[in-house]
Length: 129
Image 1 (cartoon, rainbow, N blue to C red):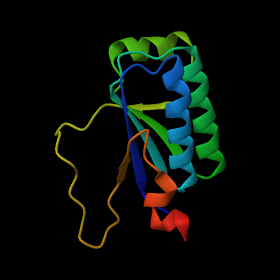
Image 2 (tube, one colour):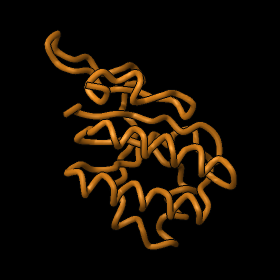
Image 3 (cartoon, rainbow, N blue to C red):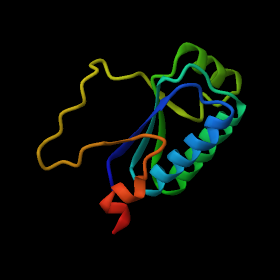
């Protein structure tokens, strides 16, 4: 099991983008990380469809024994989550203090970062084998 996978969401999580990001998060969850992080630092807003998708991903991760964490949502996104009353269900964390990637011991498995258009399973030998 991978320790974590980070999916960096760029742009608004609304309209047609919700389906694309939903597939990306679902594919990332299928690889079996202990923790799936949706980095929302560069996501200016989420709509109702995005909240439904995030809740679906959250349930998928919980069923697999993992967690979904939303990293670095803006105040606007946090407010939307609070108004939808999902801020107590979805884990939210602030972005790391240092923008540099965390250093891992040489024998540790590094966290994975994926983009919406990547083939997660094809790039992940653990998932493929």
